[in-house]
Length: 263
Image (cartoon, rainbow, N blue to C red):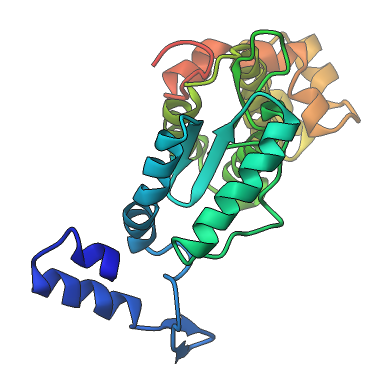
C-alpha cells in the first residue's frame, strides 16, 4: 500500500484496493482472512506485482543486466554459471532486504535457458538459440485437445470443432511467437487424427461404419475392410479410408484452423 500511495493520489482508489486485499478468500464454503499477499490468480496480482517490482526492474537496469519479467516471474541472463550464482545471491538479498519479499528458493535456480521455461516458452540448445514452446506447454495443449475431442462429450462434430477452433486460434495467437514451425506441422495431422478417431468411435457398429464410408465416397471393398477391422480407433483414424472420407479440406470447411499455416 505504501508503494501504491507513492504513485496514486486518489484516496478512494487506495481504499478500494485495500478492501480487495483484506476481503479474505473462500475455501470449502468458508471465508478465511488474508494476512499478506493477494489470492492466487487474483486480478490484482499482476498489477500490484508490477508496482512493487518496478524497483527491481530499476535495480537490474542500473546493474546493466539483461532480464525479462512478467508479474512475479523473472529471468536474468548472464554469461556464465559463476556469474549466475553471484547475481542470484545478490538479487535475492535485494528482494528480501529492500523489497521485504520472500523468494521461492525451490523455483529460483541457475541454469541454461534451454533447461528452463518462461511464460510457456523455452529456447533450443543450438549455437544460435531459437524460441520454442516449452515441453510442459505442449503436454497441456494435447491434454486440452483430448478433452475437447473426447468421445463421452456426446456432441456433434460441428459443435466439437467449433469449440476446438476457438481454443486453437487463441493458442496459436499466443504461441505463434515460437521460432520452431516443425512443432505446428506435427500438431496439425495429430489434431485431424483425433477428430477422425472421435467420428469413428461415434459410429460404433460395423454396419453403420460401412454405410457411412460408402456414403462419403469410399469404395465398398475398402469400406468393408475398414469397417470389419479389429484395429483400434486411433489406428483406423489414419487409414486410407478415413483419410479419403475426411480429407484436410473437410476440416477446413468446418473451420478448424491450421496451426502451421493460415490465420
